[in-house]
Image (cartoon, rainbow, N blue to C red; front, side):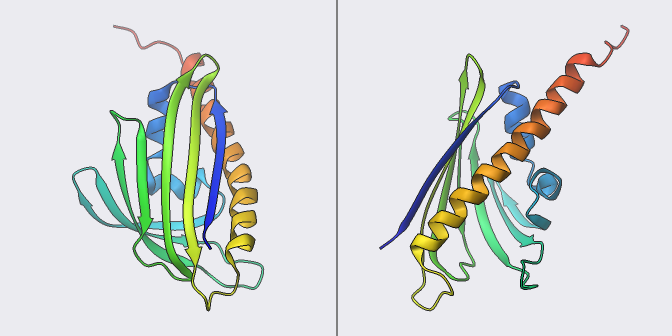
Length: 159
């Protein structure tokens, strides 16, 4: 068995701002509430390999892993996979961005499977990811929409 999640949100901001803020990996600890730190390990073309470290969970455990992320701005997609899989047999992620009349529709798809000896099963992780994605997407939307409003109200620079 495997896990699959799909979560979406619409962000009332220009596509370039949404793209830039959500793909600024080094800024993720300020964009997401769950990440304590990001360490970029390498960059090659449109691909970045990095270590994500989360804030301690309710048991004091700090989770950390290495992922590889490839952006395709022309296609408005991002593909990522865990390189250090930890309790996952695999974890593949796809982010899609689409301009709509209401803003930018951001869609996250995650396909994964837990290892047989993982502390949780695929169903538990599916529920966990679905709950957490809704929370994180709302935080991201609010931060990006605030940045968009601030840019709109900033005084124009004299020429």
